[in-house]
Image (cartoon, rainbow, N blue to C red; front, side):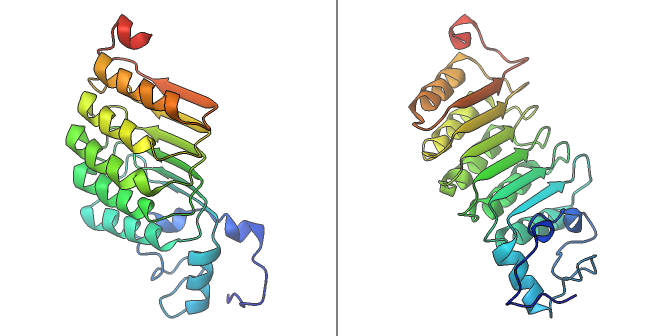
Amino acid sequence: FLCQPTMAMPDWFRHMPADVLAPGALHFYDAATAFRVGATDRQMRNALTQQLLGIKVNLRRKRLSPEVVHSLAKSLRALEGLKELEVDVSFTCIGEHGACQLAQGIGALRRLQSLELLLAGAGLGHSGCERFAKELTSLRGLTRLKLDLSVNEIGDAGLRELSKSLRSAFLLKALVLDLNRNRISDPGVACLAQVVLELPALTEFEVALFDNRVGEDGAR
């Protein structure tokens, strides 16, 4: 179907499910989807990029090739009007490079207010977490952030960089971090705690630190 520029976009379309982003459907502007988003349908493409407000991508435990990750990042980057985004690429082993590509795409969404990014077991490592965190510093309009970085061995070095990236989130009201099984110790936790206390708008904070190296000092 065609979307006329003069017509108001219905709510169901603004919050369209993201099955169109599944492997085999990327890049979705070229795919034969239920919405018939084609490279020649400029009206539909403009409607998606400018008026789509929320999207959810669930690729948990899928085998994602570098090409698919690149296409996903490119597709997300184009959705410039997006305000709510949920992405689950847990246990996909996309690695440091894939996670950074994804973060670059998400980091371009300057209107984003709510982000849920699940990267458990993605193979980040501490260097990958450092690069990943730097890409997210541009998201200054976030009011809600949920990150699952469990089982990535980010260590204290990765947590320090992640904490630094949060300093620019002045509007952040709710923060949820899953940091289980990451070889984190007291210094890393102390850095996170210091940054969290400095966030002026934060009212809700939750962190999971199961199976790390946190002692009594870090627990305080």
